[in-house]
Image 1 (cartoon, rainbow, N blue to C red):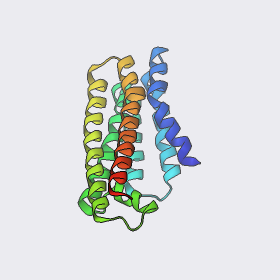
Image 2 (image 1 turned 180 degrees about the vertical axis):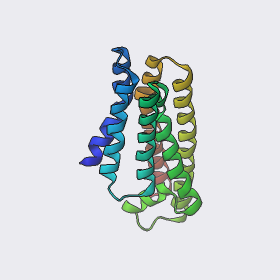
Image 3 (image 1 turned 120 degrees about the vertical axis):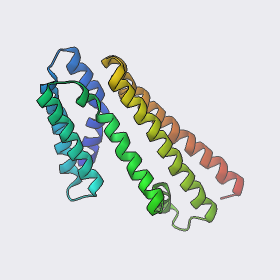
Length: 182
């Protein structure tokens, strides 16, 4: 339940920032939203993995930067931070193993065949590529685009792209399973 609220607030974050900036709310005051989000991540994560606490701490640092400088840019860097964190999680799982997608697959299929292991490794690599591209676009919109374009990309297009990748991978997996008769 706690994580659902944090995820919903994270998903709505670009729109909330856009509305705040459109109403000429000073960045120093909007930083409170990021502060709350960072504190909620700490609260929801409890004594969870270091990466959860690290993301929360980085969000708090961005909030502090925005509040101290009274500047918009730190507020707009939060989606970059989220993508970098996810890239770190997925990428580290490739190095240390097993890949994250394999771990998720084994929740429903503990006896994953070798071709399934190879497939999940490739899917984890694709997600790493996605986070590189998505994070780069989030950074580009934060640095050079209007607030409206930033919010459109980070609060809409990025989620559609993520959903398309998930849906496309699911369809491909169904075709591959049908082909091998699993």
